[in-house]
Length: 137
Image 1 (cartoon, rainbow, N blue to C red):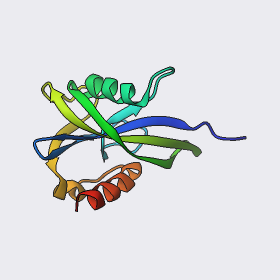
Image 2: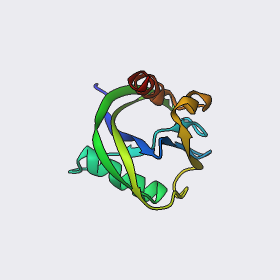
Image 3: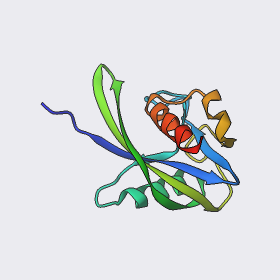
Image 4: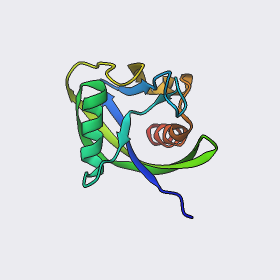
């Protein structure tokens, strides 16, 4: 039987030459306390872009504008001994307005690009970091 593919979005969100990262809650079933590029699960009849804009506003309280699709990446998490495949549509985006709030995450911060590797990122986000750092070097 084929596994259901879970589609999500993630944003490399820029503001004043810094990148937004968020820390997963400590009670998250999927890599708790790990850092990630924020985003979320696509709802039925929702575009990837609309999903990212909605999720960032719901979880962090800010408004963003999407520049373009940056990459697509896939990762398989394990949940209770079962595979949980995830595909992420990753977008470059820019902060437009609002004050950063930790509504649905443990922590969030704007960091220098050169400091991204100093954080303990979720497994699915490692490929994003690698490609992003190669694109800006």
